[in-house]
Amino acid sequence: MTKRVAVVTGGLTGIGFASAKALLDAGHEVAVGSRRGEDDSMAGHARDVLGGKALIGKLNVTSVSSITSFLDHTNNRFGVPTLLVNAHGIFHEAQLGNHSDQAWFDQIDINLNGVFRMIRAIFPGMIAKNHGRIVNISSTAAHVGAAGYAAYCASKAGVNGLSKAVAVEGAPHNITCVSISPTFIETPMMENAVKRIGKKTGKSASEIKEQLKLTNPQDRLVQPEEVGALAAFCCSDEAPALTNEDIQINAGAVW
Image (cartoon, rainbow, N blue to C red; front, side):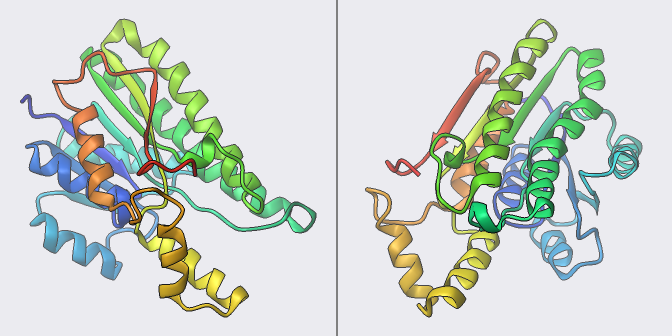
């Protein structure tokens, strides 16, 4: 294994945190970016689990200046990053007739434009190093539409298309790019969705989770560590030809 510098966005919780830990365990230097920054209680937990080895900093993927500042910090501490896992993301449930412009723009800007901005900022360094691994966390929602999730589905479908274009452009420079599309994952984002569904339906969190389990043939909720392990493999020296592909972690489910 060649030690490299990795950047993980949305890295304080869920899939991002699992990916950061997997990359650190593999021996890489890891910079974790989050809109919560380094003073949040979640950052404290991340420092405890990661043993203080990772750089944890504030990163707003909607802001070019924030991205530049975070990458400057990363470069100064570790060097030029050639591994990138884009794990940030948000979603809002809304029926089309009641879907606000702002909710649409926010999801497109963070989920899709934010991925583009991160890749654009890191890509030249990868070309200079003649090495790059890019993993974009997408969703099965990119493949299957769902009522109430128009903006989320559209943004994740865009991530898959962007990933394929990046893979082709990066191929001559030893840069790979894949998207990973998980089904429901037991993360804080899902927990927040469960709470919102509970308020609307009056059902308990346990009832809602049981319903979600039944949506896949394995009758379970996929764990973030499963996605993190795959992201780390896609970033490894063992996967030089794994590119231009969307990999679904779906437990046998469609959604």
